[in-house]
Length: 401
Image (cartoon, rainbow, N blue to C red; front, side):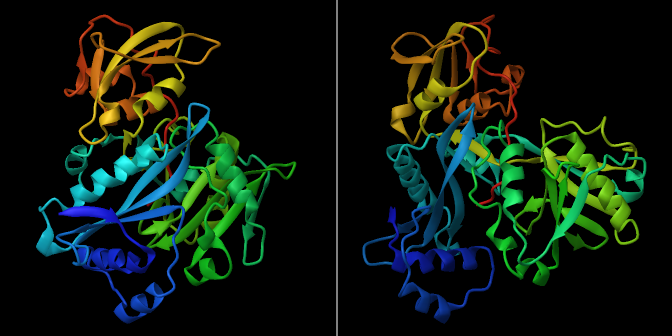
């Protein structure tokens, strides 16, 4: 089994693999016709695994090229999607061949991170990924929003032909200090034109008294619920820049939809605690949902750019079964007012971890207090201050791939 990048005329093969693997429709003739004029997309790389020369790919992976925020910097990230294997070739190393090649290519191309949404966390740990942050998914009865104050401002519905740029601006402001969040030129191209109305999705924008947009919701009906959650089955959302914008939106939802819906469902990053904001939570449904998995693609780059607290030195041993350049002990030297100094050392490591745990700890998905409950992290210097490097930060990704 070997892997290589697919040529544009072969992209349809990845679509076929996904259709078979995920039991979804596939218009064979139409896809073959489209393949004749297919062009390379600089934001996507398609990988295929082949049993032999001259044979069709039996597995495929799509690597989505993104730019993400990380401690005040913008880094390249590879989002793994479209992982599919034809049933007759499962458990034969086909996906592994694609993943290993794709991750090594990311390193060569200057990417520092990779992210994915797993069907199984145990499965993707073998490729160096670790569980990242969480989305806190709230389902709140509309009647329980009755006591929210009217904070003023104005809500207007955006319809075909309206300017959608405020959505992008609000998203950028809301995610400004959130690690792993993706930069977007447009919030969602699927919201343009008449498509939202055809799909029965509604867009509402809240602006303050001065007309400055501060939040929006994209919603659709799921039975008696106003669905505002970003997920593969429906890319709705509720985005806000501060508490006032959120209250303004939820107050509007109560006033406008109390007769139409029983509840509203939305998600927020797990660093946001809404228990003190919502007036009535005794009847709410609240649960954390995994916000994907992440791994370091370039460990040295992350260590050079991570935001540490105070002054100190920490020797971090990194293991990576796929990208050999990460297999080393890195001495991190940090102090306020200057860039981190990072050098490879032959000395002993104060702490040892794989590329996945390194990414989620430096990104702030988890803090130093989580290390004691992570058996595959080894602390060799008991008593050393780890919370100067590993501490909780806003960390969340909304993009799906």
